[in-house]
Length: 291
Image (cartoon, rainbow, N blue to C red; front, top):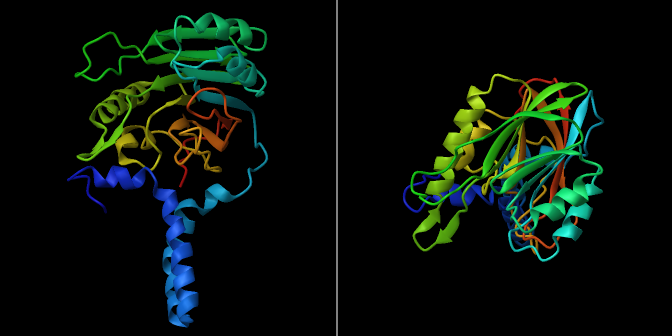
């Protein structure tokens, strides 16, 4: 109900929406100080609203209900000072798929060497890449570049993962950054890129689809509606991933169509400015949204 005009206030609020739960603590303290039974009863309404929106994410992960994949998503940072250490940490995460963003020509051979043993199949397009335990085929670059960016810019790919349980269309993307300024949230390029990526997912004929990437937005941000309206998000886990030093939002996402993202969590910090996130996906479960 919060409008985006002016200052894109709606998207700004939605970027930190789970943190509104802290207001419940403040309201509880005030109600107890006033020793007001009426205030305590009134507190049940916002508490119920928060529990409806986010309480399910706090529940423990359920047992796998069928064949699935474990995927890791990580923006490794183009100024990462220890790509070899980052690669070793990701290689030991037990993932079937590892999606990386902000790959640089200098660091790429390091990731290729460190991940080759456990993930012998990989593809890279521009600054994004995917490493896989299973063969990859039909890879292509996706054009999600906003019209206002004139320089060379390649930050999305689509490929097919030949898993033992059937083919999976895998997408890796890095959407443009957003900035908080005195004029509000600057997210026009991110939003434009999300529309282009959403159109590509909508046109995808193969099911299931798994999208991994640094989308520079939370699943509650209406700017990502072109994606969240078409793909299910995690049923369990907050997995705040950015900034790595004090994570307050998950902008690194794993979404799926024709599959269910059962749980998402974070891995220990690397030398990048994002935390890696890991998700467990159950295949063949149909479209499932987070809430």
